Amino acid sequence: MAGTITLTINGSSRTVPVAPGQSLLIMLHDNLDMTGAKYGCGEGVCGACTVLMDGEVTRSCITPAEMAAGKSITTIEGLEQNGKLHPLQAAFMENGALQCGYCTSGMIMSGVALLRKTPHPTDGEIVRFMDGNVCRCGLHPHIIRAIRQVSEGGEHV
Image (tube, rainbow, N blue to C red; front, side, top):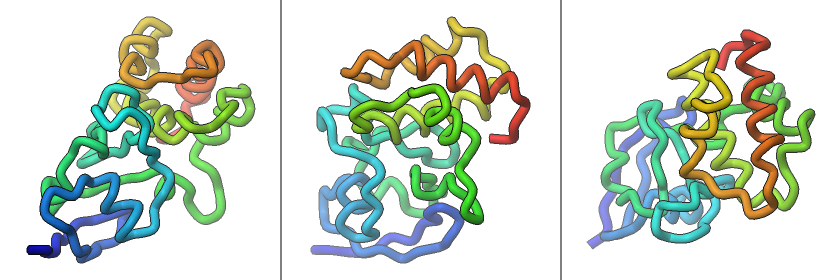
């Protein structure tokens, strides 16, 4: 039997219908029309589906939607504020850190989580933290450069 959950999504409280066994990713796509997080591997290892749940990196493809009840979820759609890109979104563009774009939202969400925890990470810390996100285009050096740019710029993430 289907039910509902109440959660905060990108700063707004929402009550959302959920089907039994429905993943957070499918709930975001089908019930909230938020398609920024992508279905990649379906096993939580590629990072394309990454969102933040209470500020923590969460693989939405393997997270049951019910687990989001009472939580605060941030998706790529929630990073832009008042028509202005998040500093990391802008840095990805400036550094050519996107090509096909499939991994981009997950990479950015993981990067935001890293910068909130460690505002000035070393390149090694960036690589270790981002290890769970796969970019098949091989843009990892550009992604590292984008994260470093934001960390060095002192911009609020």
